[in-house]
Amino acid sequence: MMRALRMVTALMVVTALVAAAVPPGQAAPAKLRVAMILPGTIQDADFNAVGYVALLELKNTLGADVAYSEQVAVADAERVAREFIASGFNVIAFHGGQFLTIVQKLGPAFPDVNFVMESSGRIDGLPPNVWNMGRKFYQGFYTLGVLAALATQTNVIGYISGVRLPDFVASLNAVKFALKEFNPRAELLYTFVGDQNDPVRARQADESVIARNADFIIIQVNLGAFGVIEAAKASPRKVLWTTFYTDKYTLDQQRFAASLLLDFTKPYRDVVARISRGQRGGYYEMRPGAGMSLGVIRNVSNETKLRVLKVFNEVVGNTRRIDEIIDRIVD
Image 1 (tube, rainbow, N blue to C red):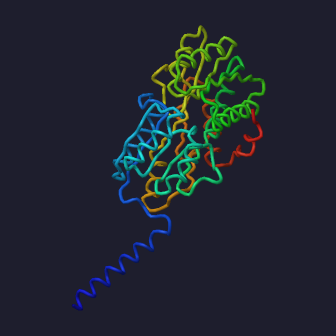
Image 2: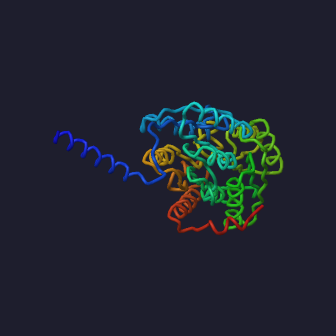
Image 3: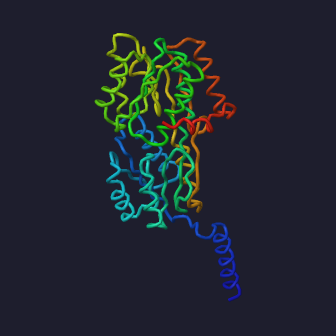
């Protein structure tokens, strides 16, 4: 009897210690079941592909059950999320900055579910069960703007973007600032084609700016990048271009200039691991040096390469402060 009492007492102590290790209101899910909602196809070799790779990493490193739905329009995203929740998924990741209002609606409606979203930075007033991954694209695009400013021969830069999201507008503003700082004579021609994954519309936009003498194109579309690149290849004069998310050097080795590379595996792994430990919501920042890197710079002079790399390292070290400036260049 005494031995049984001691065992019960020990079990109560262990239970109390486990309960104390998890703050009130932050109980971790018994089993991680993560569903990711992607706006495009995972075969785009771009934004959606790197999101899918990050999802698989959660399965391999954290043992999470994973599922995904691709090519989900904003209008359908809430329905898809609710279907995942009804199927027992307790972590819903929205891979894209266009899903903010949906997360703000679903967070309070499903307090036992954890949500992961992406945005341009900190957002006040998010539900307590939401993790916000702030992608400071503009810090990386500032560096691409420096590259364009130094590499252009015609002093005309093209900028092709898709959806007019806040972080894309901030990236455009960062490029404007870089041109003003490193080549005040350069003109910036920009277009928001309204879709990240439409190669036809992206190609038409690129042909338009090339016809106006642009010889350097900064790409901020996903699957649409293939249309931009085809337009550059078809140009009678040499037109350099940059991409982001993944390196696309093999698509056109003579015109590729650089890529701003993004690795979502560590951010998603860190966030979901914290969820598993009971931290329901918070902020995780992606920026140069933390999930963002600059790929190999090609087809420009060594002097230009060295200057651009110096600037990128200054952004990584936060010695070249551009945050307070970008917000003032609202277009």
